[in-house]
Length: 261
Ligand SMILES: O=C(O)CCC(=O)C(=O)O
Image 1 (cartoon, rainbow, N blue to C red):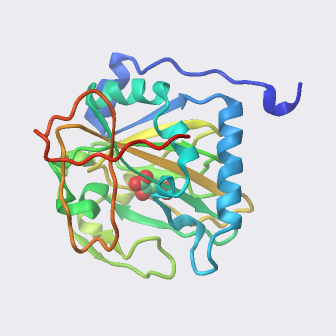
Image 2 (cartoon, rainbow, N blue to C red):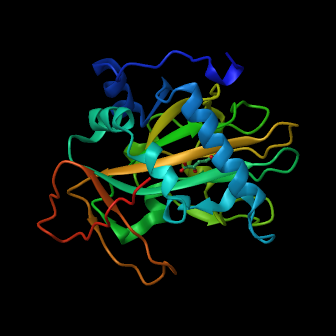
């Protein structure tokens, strides 16, 4: 038996207490959903993608990788993932998006404090998304694990200001007056573990100055009553996929068919 054949404990679906914690605090630290073998295969995909990135693209910027890599649907549509997502948003589940944020060792970018829902703006109405953040690598304080402010999702729209693009993945950050950064909670994860956050939870992460890469896969889902609106300021086509249950927008949304994987 090789080390990659050895498995680890898989978490059962969240308890009622965990789901209540998520709704109250806007995040939940969770265990493992994928087997070690599945996770090792995912890491191989990521390593390959990173090795083949155009020179001008940083590995934190691997947004919507599933459009070009159907193999990722094996993870995004995995019944065990959808069983967990269903606990948070109900039985009608749409894949909104996904993104690898891989901070290379030594100079991985900081992610400024932000709320995803503000970034996505009017594209989704109402704004309701749960993000599963999967640790492809161990994620620690040293290599810039994600940080959250508990309960911040209840404040919805906070104010933003510009930040230096050289050091940050995005150009805008929540202003100091609207967020007490000293209350930030470090969400450290072992390889294969995950955490969840709400579209309005204030979160961010520090740069990676350690000697270890920090790669997370953000897998984003919304209930099927959320309307997907076209936004001309978003300079690319975006596809969404109905993964479980029924459309609840009376046909407003157009869903793409999940490719063979
Ligand atoms: O990976 C990080 O540090 C931040 C992740 C993030 O912004 C997100 O999942 O929305």
